Length: 208
Image (cartoon, rainbow, N blue to C red; front, side):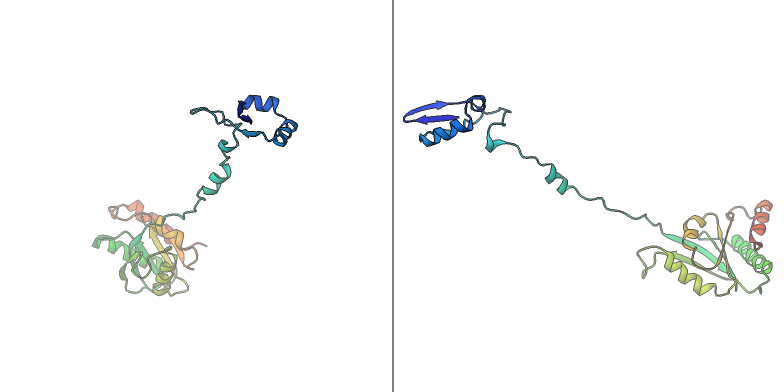
């Protein structure tokens, strides 16, 4: 700090200011017309505690305010696509691009499933399901699958068999559609496996 008395100046450092310049002395100097200046720290000095104009503000609150809040991101829903074959009361859904041999086994599954439930056996109808569609490109496939089931499985005794390769992506969205859902083994490349066929027939039998 610099003290001016007339033409004389006295430079008082920060340490001296704290030790010798009490509030009472400061008031007396002011009454005497003594002008006081605080000496700025030298360049590169890290000591800014005694210079009110150079104290580093606490920016903790500012930084906290600038932090971006966490944004919850929903799970990514993968596209769904499968081939299906249906009768009047039942349907089997499997992977796309099934060959004629697989279609023949799908028909056998429909016949057995309807027969085991005492339902009338009718001619099968075949098609594909894909989601998302042009008019339904967002959200989840739950609504699209519900509309699909309501359109093709109108019987109160409706049942839907899913092969194991499509079941993980489709079954979770069918919990509220009101049809019996059955998961059967994958069919592609396993048509001649007697154990696979036996497993399918056992799973198609109605429970209870």
